[in-house]
Image (cartoon, rainbow, N blue to C red; front, side):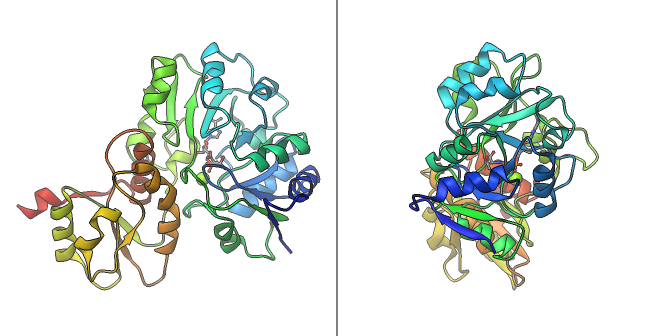
Length: 346
Ligand code: TXA
Ligand code: MG
């Protein structure tokens, strides 16, 4: 039976840490999404993460640490830029990829010579990692391929109460709502592998230079060699086909109204809801405030993950910062399919 541990329970951190030390799986809240945690130095515990999620073995995990200084325990050849990023953004929604030390088992890194490390912000999770005394390997806690989990209930929904999880720690909905930004500092130049809670502009302000991996902006063949292996899989996707509708609010609504039929759903900005009256639109946040879009995206995709919905018309933000991460997740859910409503109207 899966234990549900509330953040407010004074014993929650101690119990969760003890379970992790015993090699059990514990779902942990972070400011980005809920993670499916296990002792990242214990091969068997790590193997059980892959089994529980149904995750491809070639997709490495992120190691979560409780203090930035612990980076040194698991990585070597750490450039000054990494420490600068840690100082500016940790604890927080940034993951750094660096050369791995032998202490980290190949199961965690999927055999790569690098490891992804993050110091999350959520206080109870940092306390759990500190008490466990080991780095916690944690992918997003969704079943593989499904939208990520931003509440404890999402995690319970994916695994059930009699499933493989020893416990779920509930600290409420995740503030950021999309996964961390991943930057590789293992190559010649810093490279953005996944957009997330920390925008590229903020990274450039610290780093000066930042390449953007092509996995971020385009779809990739399943057999392609990519720097963040997880980026090649179809992701975050409800069972319906997602179609991103670009163009002005009015042009998009006109297009959707023309195309809309049985089994269709609309995912839009709060500002545009009235344009879709009668089509039962779901607003996932405000276009004017991209942080509400990131906070609401995955819960909305989960709400629309139903047998009777076969196509979702989605509105997608433009711009940088966290809007870039929202766009990336929607594009991945859509298999990078966009329609330009302005053009199709002509
Ligand atoms: O916000 C987050 O990062 C959440 C929370 C739980 O911390 N975790 C998360 O993990 O999103 P996951 O496993 O869903 O995504 C990790 C991504 C994958 O795309 C994986 O391929 C990439 O990080 N990754 C892990 N280790 C890597 C490495 N050594 N080099 C390049 N990419 C790596
Ligand atoms: Mg994930």
